[in-house]
Length: 189
Image (cartoon, rainbow, N blue to C red; front, side):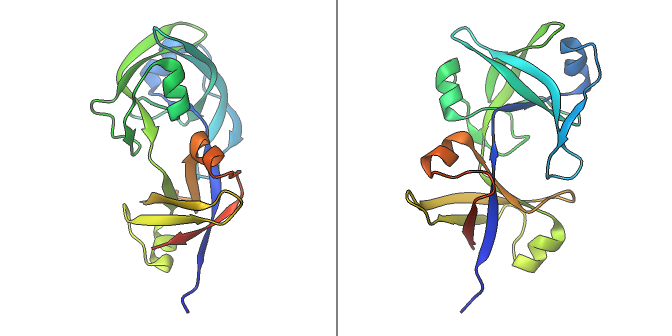
């Protein structure tokens, strides 16, 4: 009998990744670390923005650091309904033909074209862990949830040098399956 692969859930709430140029249009102060994230070198900052469309606004959306080479807004389907958007489900960085959204900071606001997505479910890991599990970057796996509202979700494997082994799902997926950060699920190849 083969050994089960167990992974821990990390719920990814709405957040933004910004370039230095856009960040400086929104804030005067440098990006500051509120708390480190499990993905090595990444952190939740003290800085927050408001997401704005013609239909609605969502305040207190966390800026994730460090600053990046591209701007990206990650929201759930529920957030999309609130804002009147229809962002595609995509891997991070795949922004072509995604939604336009306005970001409001302390200093100003910026409207970004092709910046808003719903993040695809993914399992972070580094190269060593991927080799140990017999997985490679962009493999698809099944997440088996065994609880009162169990079921199966698909996720892709995201291998990176700073990858900390955990499963990222958004708030809507977590609510659907009664999952919390830290809960364990089985990963099936």
